[in-house]
Image 1 (tube, helix red, strand yellow):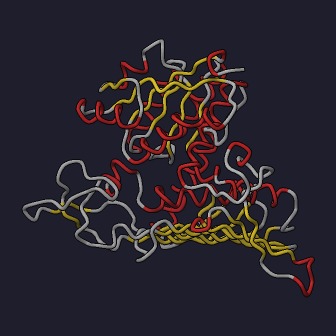
Image 2 (tube, rainbow, N blue to C red):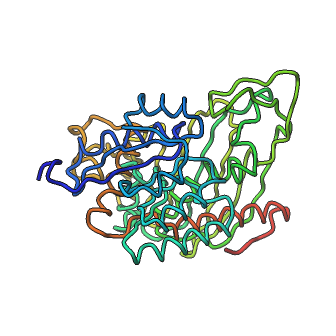
Image 3 (cartoon, rainbow, N blue to C red):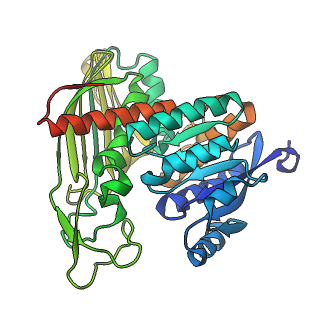
Length: 393
């Protein structure tokens, strides 16, 4: 079946910055590499500033632009709403879109509070009964090596899971003169390193192991508590220092560390920080079990290291080159040995969401799964407020 014979799914994307650019690249290319049951059409991008939204539409490949997301959601010619805005707007936009009968892809974390996430999950369940699907954008699930890691764990490659270790480390705000962008304001972002990057590695751990974290003891820290106010619309990696010496309070965490238990009995440790000098986007997930170990490192995202304890005196960590057509997602891409990059995770995510729309099957991670992560993030914050008191989830 050709694209012209398939049902067209028209997409509206709200927001056009870092995540908007990544999502746009995915919508532009997904049907060029995967044989989908529907054909995506990039209908409209929405932003508050008409001039900037118009520029983004032209640059990113959208047919048109708009400045009022409410008007766009009300349109009969829109099938999917893709939310790439800061966390304080997720609930309002997602709920309105689902109630209007649109399919919704929402960036993570799902919301800024558990109450918001609960309402979003409840509305999503009602909308699902009427055929509207919803999914949270935990894109690292779509790294082929991470998906293969999950498959191998499920197949018993590591045996009984005993330890899980996760790290997500960056350094983009180590300079105390870096401005107070929206990601450093709790009323907009919800939390800091914990929700922005910690949410990813926590979700990856649960996705890979198939186990839920059911208790945590945590500490958080804000190393720089006052920062210059930004000039204009400062964003990650693009802000400029404010003038006049004015500063504002940083109201989110710079770093979080925690120990945890899973419902399968494993002991886990996690770290999320924006103050790991020299680390740009350093992600590590390690699973140790009774029969072996698996290690994923994002800086080697096309590889997976595996230790098979049954190999005896020939045992050692072996690197699996995750580029074979039998590996997850690889069948739509390049010949074996030709690796993928960060942007491909979003294409793979778009593929999964569009295929769910085509088949009517429930996509994952669902809003319910996003709610579970929101409860976990809140438990970490509560534990840290009580000096690492053990907190059940």
